[in-house]
Length: 187
Image (cartoon, rainbow, N blue to C red; front, side, top):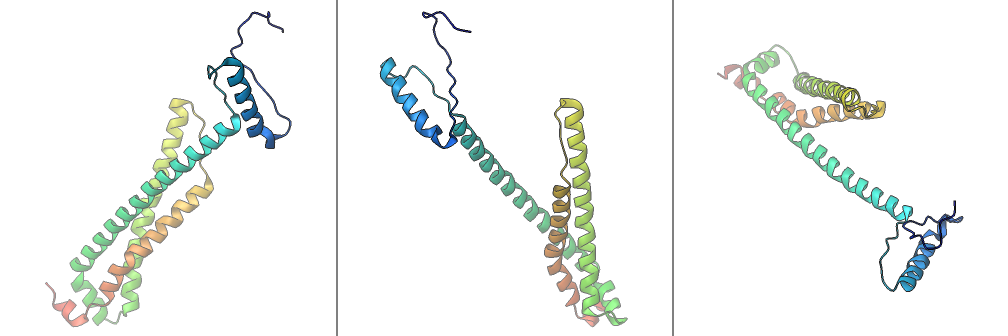
């Protein structure tokens, strides 16, 4: 549909056959419009540039979210380690009795690592369930389609497992290194 010659043009779309020429053509169009209009009373939008900008914003967002997640893991892991260290202190007599009854340092280490792992896997499972409920809630109430990635659930479980082992190792080693005789006498 052709417009009358005196009709103002408020939008022009150009399609370029060779995508590698987008930036060069955009430069040419900008210079031509600047010359013809004696200034810059126009705005030039290049989808390629918008996509690059969007990807840069998404990368920044991913770094921020990743940093928050790493900090959360550090705080959570420190909490687990503190709980396990308190458990070692509270159960010093029990550890001593187990050692006197024949439990090796390895048995004590495995026991405390298993407890730490159980704690983190329980927290990880609750986190996955809350995430699934959140995705369902967003879909139900905001009518935004959401999908839950099986890969993300597997990674979350793996990270919870690694956190439990990593932050539970020190308290487990402390428990295993207790002297059995001193531990039995501990009040």
